[in-house]
Each structure stands twice: as structure tokens, then as C-alpha cells.
Image (cartoon, helix red, strand yellow):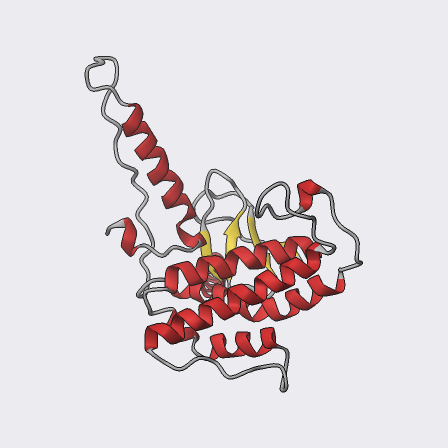
Length: 245
């Protein structure tokens, strides 16, 4: 499978890291140096997209798109009319540009522009007419997010799927950080099936369990984790019955 067919989501983080490390090793390799051997390609196989994103990552993108509505509102609520330090502001334009009176307001406008831009791109792709004026039934951001969610499956099968999903994930990370929003992350009781460390973490509301061991980084869908729990419980019951009989 080529890297172009691999899911662009977090499920392939370890694959991309290994691929990039191999590319760098090839760039550093000197075939005339007898002390060096040609770098072997990584053994990690990428998780395929279906057709672009895998099911687990597509579900994560859908959830984070829906959560942008709350995050934009939370970001707007943090606006106090004061500028932030230069280090905290998003870099844009020349250094001589006047500072914005509210970084939160800028973030809200940029997020809205991002969302409407993706709606416009998909409408253009499908040769649909432009969106009608919004703001009467709900905020423009809420209406746009609802429209994107309504057409989500089509967008995720389209030529813009990879860039759309990656930007939604990026904006969700940025807004979650700036609003200090989030949910509880807990350690799951089972050991990671790959590295065998007790480092499986789950964030409430998500459909995947992640290994926090940086050397491993295994990602399980919540269904896979639950199936593993049932398998181990069944095995323990079988062993107990054998011991008793």
C-alpha cells in the first residue's frame, strides 16, 4: 500500500514517523561509505483509508466538527477586550500591522471563514449554488457546521477529504487549548496488547483508546478494546472452570 492510500489521521502517526525517519536515513546514506549499510524500510504497515479516512478517524473528525460549535462559543466568551502578548497571538501579516483588540474575536472570525470556505469548496466541487444568507435561524457558524455535518459522508469521500479532516482536527486542538476545554482522560485497566505496558488511555466521548507509551503509540477502537476485555474475561472464566473441575 502506498502512503497516499493510508488514512491521514492519527491512526497512522507511528507509520508516518517511521516513514519520515527512513527518508532521512536514505538522505544521509552514503553508498560509497563501506561502514554504512543501506537503511531498511520500516516494517510498520499503514492503516488504509476507506476510501480516504479509516472509520475510527472519520468518526473522530465528525465529532470534532460538531464540537467546534461549542468551542467557538467558548472562545468568544473568553474575549475581554484586551490584547494578548505577541507570543500568544497567531502570526499573520507584516510586523507593522496593528495588533487586534481581541485575539478571541480574531479566532472566531478565522474559524468561521475556515468553515464557510470548506462549504464553498464542496459546493463548487458538486456544482451547487452558493449558500443562502444565514443568521436568522441560528448563528452563521452553527448553520455552516450543521450543513457540513449533513454532507459529511460525501465530503469525506471527495477529493478535499484529507485537507478538510486535517484542518478540522487542527482547529479543534487549537480551540480546545485556548479555551481550556476538554473532558476527563482515564487510564484503562487492560495492558496494551502491543507493548504490554499499563498505558492505555481513553478520553471520555472518544471512540478510540490510545497507548501513552511513546515508543508504542498503539491505537485501538473502543469496540476493539471492549472485545479484548470480553476475550480476557472469557479466558479467565475458562481457566477457573478447569481449575475447579
